Length: 378
Image 1: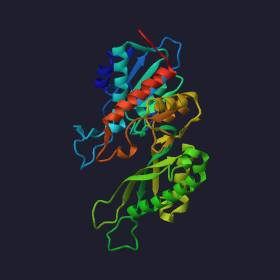
Image 2 (image 1 turned 60 degrees about the vertical axis):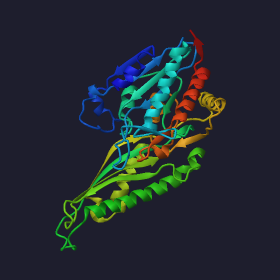
Image 3 (image 1 turned 120 degrees about the vertical axis):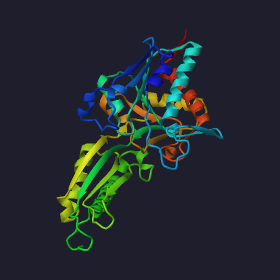
Image 4 (image 1 turned 30 degrees about the vertical axis):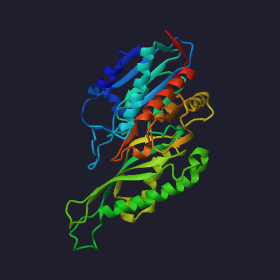
């Protein structure tokens, strides 16, 4: 983050390292720590292009953290350019978006352009683990007329962003030698049973809520449930005593508190007798969906900006959970998602972004600032 601070420092009216307080771990919206590095060594960055006060303001958010590289991923952290695309971990999620904002600030500085309304940039840590960086910015308070969270959206305007519940279930069996199957209970089998119950709940909730929003209804499953990790057992011939299952449960219009309660209740009441009393369920982060009216003026301004720059775009939903809900639901600043790069590339072993996409997105957001905030030449 200090590197980002250095790149923006001479381009803006305000550029500051914003400490993340250590006591954020006690915040009810806190997710979980990535590592034991103190937060004082991992600040956010806040950048402001100050307006004259006559225009509307906007917050742009982009995150600096990335998910772990995959074992077979080439050039994970030594990016490679091939056929007009940059390959490497985080290229589209979310470093391309940071580059877009830098190019806008650089152009404004070089051309002597000033916005009439404040343009505020939030560069945050720990987005991929639940949004602790953005949470810290929220607790400081910020005012703006709208917010735009940047991510790999294929240049679409996502006015609806799914919510998510990140869960960690621990299941306890009865371990014996595999020669005594009549008295053993496999924790691994219990975890598999819980997976089935969670999937059944997902299917019911999807059927109940998908038609609440016509944008969600365009997609076959805009709130997928993902089982990301399952660990169990200490020895191949021993029945596992404990299994740990981690995953993410998507949400549309269902409140996160309801989903957390019902996931646990379903496992307790719809599983085997042993399962009902031999599991713990914890939640690592929980986001409500972020849903705004596609007819809001700033959405129209962004739509017009894509059209004027001849960049294909549509109003859509984001089927991955993001930090948008912090702005829309916590601060009351309506937020949407947009950005270059494709979501299907994020987290993959071939993550990449088209360099032309960065140029196009920079032009679109510059046009948006011109239309929404207004600009003047110094």
